[in-house]
Image (cartoon, rainbow, N blue to C red; front, side, top):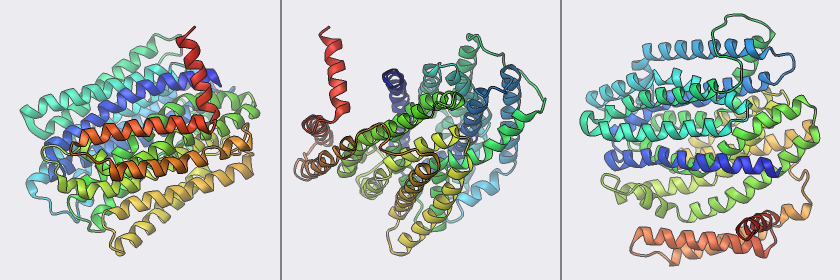
Length: 509
């Protein structure tokens, strides 16, 4: 477990830096275009390539990792087969989407008062961004192969490289060719990313990449796994697409698109850092342990992993909820992102942050289902919650007059229901329990520190609001960090004590 945590820590550090650059891109868009139709156009044009990368590419990657470790798999042949399948799938999906550009964009802008000029800009952005889907899907595939070979840092570095170049090229070119720079940058940075990954893979003593149209039981199993994983593993991305679509359907206003995007991205920032680090490392390990029938280790990983997520994400959620307005001010409120936009965005952020733990837990728990060879159960539960509970909640809250906040409530309530269902079924079917390998006393210990932290952050956010937004933020972060550590130590949270002893031994050895 200690080695596992060290690897996760290293990957998390790289992911933090990578996500910071990705988030800087959102901040620059907010600075340059605020919540205008131009910003909406950039987000809409990038939505589908990003969706294909994370959902379709991620599904193929997860399936490849599972099948690669099977004893019946011819790894050399399978690498070529899966490369061919992913490449052709990406090309065909990209071509079909490009041919349907106008109806697709019309569907997402049906209720928006977008001008013909703004629609043309969105199309140009889409034409540049969409071809990057093929490169991004192949990049995801390469990342999976690197993770199987325990080269987790290379796949994480690739995301960092992508985000750095995306930001630099987009900002630099935007002063020359305007918003289209974001489309050009998406394509170029994707090409740089896949070059880095391919070069890293070639340096391994691993099966060579090539083309093969051979079909056998492994390719059949690949397709059988991919479709359910796309739905079960792409929940967050499916939420994003539905949010974008229902903003228009519910008639929540033109600026609602950007508001939801800024709010959801701010929420996903801490969540994605942690869950990406954990799932990048844990799924290849899970697949190997499942192949070795090491069920006790899997139960231990399940219980401890969820406990760690709880200890990390709940305090962040508490801070983010009470400091939602200040976070929006510090991160976005510059130039064309006005105080009025902040006032509308902050309540949406406050609701979205409450879903952080549940969305992360859903992703984490789903990986254990995949390791068990069960890709259908997460699909059924995701379909029920994302396409039923989520949509019903959005409609109910919109009818009740909650406006843009109704989108956030849909995500929150459906993600909670999904987590509860996944946990119950995993306990009944696979004997995976929340308290596995942990004493009951350790499970209840964090409750009082969480309650105390809620009180401290409420008082801090209400009575320590200073004239300078950055000073308010710094004071809040200091109080939050100090309070969390003190509370964890006071109530003898085992994980913080273990961390302190290791830190002390390294400093004073």
